[in-house]
Image (cartoon, rainbow over all chains, first blue to last red; front, side, top):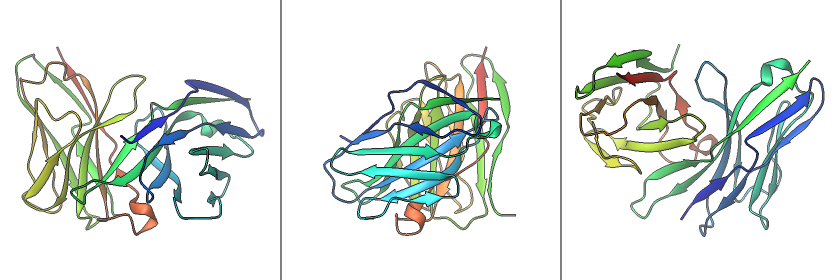
Length: 117
Length: 116
């Protein structure tokens, strides 16, 4: 069964430093997608970055990069030059296609990031 | 502006009452989803719909019902059969299939339901 594991319930980082949020996934599918979402205290989910299972290069979006290690089944999020506004919950997720042909997304339990001034 | 609108943002109900959460999108997306989030937990899928007049149960569908009569709308009813309905509910939509930006989900701002 598809599963996402985020082992860090909470992380702290100093403003302007880089931080890595861990994510490992479990699937026997060859085709899947990996996502990171940010959830501020207001509750909305904000899409950050996407990596396809066949993408050879690591995805980057501004200060966000995804360190994709397929053999290890890991998809860690790297945030460079942390800002106070980065303080939030971060969720790793994986999309897959069901036997019925529907696309589903499974989420990890999240990591709470706190950026200190 | 295009997006997903959930209402109400906060809702209080007495135990045993059914309650319906609204979700409307103007993104012209085929697929819509309902997730439940409990404190310290990730999102769990309740129901999803890939096309109008069709929907499938997710991982925790018991005690919930949905309808998809229009492409834009996917209301969720929390019935009295749901044993622990107090939670944060998130509605999402996506272009059908994973081909465009990986089929990322666009989320509404959520509805927080408290059962007294």
